[in-house]
Figure 1 (spheres, helix red, strand yellow):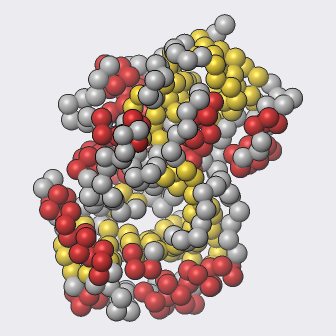
Figure 2 (tube, one colour):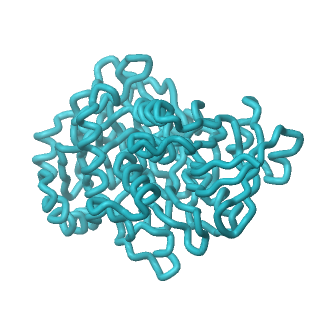
Figure 3 (cartoon, rainbow, N blue to C red):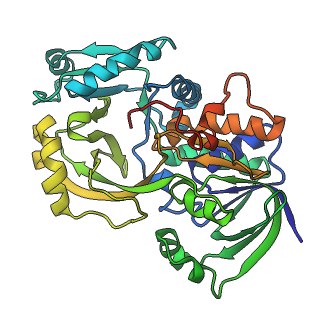
Length: 408
């Protein structure tokens, strides 16, 4: 039976960053990525907002993002990285809470500017009504990039380092309680990709399809929103849930936010930023719907939904966008862990199995550091001195979450 030394399940930003880091250290041979849709448009990493920021409540997250951002800055042209900063708007309760963790951010040498509502209006003239904002922070070190270009960069380096890409294959069975594991893949026809990713019943997913069985010495669950589905194949209930998140694109001839920061609007639970579609400027906006339930669902919301729930919030901040044309949008998925932090490292009681999931919408901004850290563990048998991620192990949930609340 054919054997693979290291099988990475999932070719999104997580799996591709790990494969890249392995290849860069000369350990790409014997590594394979398997994914239902490596180069397709339904990959969750292709459908996010592309924000990159280092403002977190937990030092480990600041460290991961700072390490990653420095890399993105070095390759800014490749990833279309633009350091425009993040602007955070808070209501009264969150404003007081946020000021408690700002010293931890500043301890890393990162600038944080605190703004009153009046200073906010004066500094960012594009904003109008901020009467519900108690305070704001501007973090100029942060920015935005192209998730697609970043992921292609990772995959290109991985392939150059002899990592094998197994596209249009789904893992349908895993057998064994310790390494090596017997893994069965099922070929996914192009027309079936959306149905498979959407949650077709497991019993029917592999029926009548070409299959491939081999042994894998090590397996990394980097399946993103589908990580809990993969975990069930090896007998674990992984606490990662997928939540659909709708993004809307707007076009307006007179509104161009290119020079503006990435806006995080907590009082209204929206974020908005500059975006380019077909090389033309537009505005990207997304709302965190409080009644959204955990599931995989690529069905886009209607224009009526936008008019009722999203437009009033956005227009309150930027009235000129009232006349903007809604011309495009998509649905991506967050993969949320119980404490909104990544799950990385060995799977408890499963020799040879590793997690790299639960990224909770922070995958793009943390992927470089997380990929390097896990590569160190796999190659050297230990975390690096700079990036020890013991606090992100899955085992933390068995003894109660040890991570503090964070902002997402």
